[in-house]
Length: 355
Image 1 (spheres, one colour):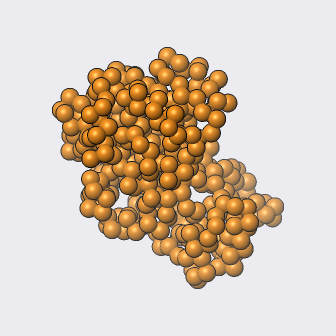
Image 2: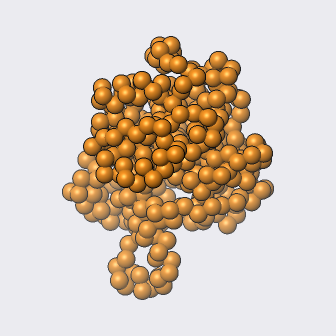
């Protein structure tokens, strides 16, 4: 009801696609421009010099001194005057905070009720299980386990602060350090997940309420520091030097999936959509990502998900092999968002893709 009230005040033929100047924002505004929309970026003052280099893609810059200003009356009023629809991306919650992200008084493209699930690693695993999606074994801090686990912190932190451990004692010691450094407040928030061996593959999807279908838009592999750099160091030397892998994401590598895997990958995406429709109606809207490990027997397990556009889609700003099969034209995820908005406006169903 709230979205419909705001839309009644909007001039729909003057809609602006807006987002934070970070993460995948250049792709988002590029796609919006390609589809004929006006665009706006909320940008930090000290980053304005960079984003102004791409001013041909941005009709309005809303300059702020901190991300926390997004929910202020000044910024919200300016965006409403632009008839703005806000596009969340992977930096959104981490930068503005969960409360602001969930309560932003603007129409948001996507499922805002999913934000609180994404902020809780245990809730994320629970949702994947409810969807019937295979996931690794998980443990709480203090529980015994066999093998190696990766400790994951609440929220989207780009892998920062994650660590691997081999014993409960090692887990306790490292969690104590994270509390001391301010990464977490409560050790119970940390999820310990079985460390899977295989290829990490990140599947990009788009669920269209307007067309009633789920699309595969691409896939990528993340390049992480220092875990990928340690591949160049012989194991014996790295252990002798006491080098521990960390998982801070520094970039992405394109991936063309084995075609025989595509039916299973699409089915996993469709199961996720169905689970969100049942638990968080109306369900996922637009882009999302299932993050997997594929082992030597081609078994796929999903260890994480993102309910928004992911940075790996920046690889395909001119479209991926999969998006071209659907659309027969260059179709990035950013442009796909704008295309869905365009279709929704044409069909008089804009409220179906906004929350």
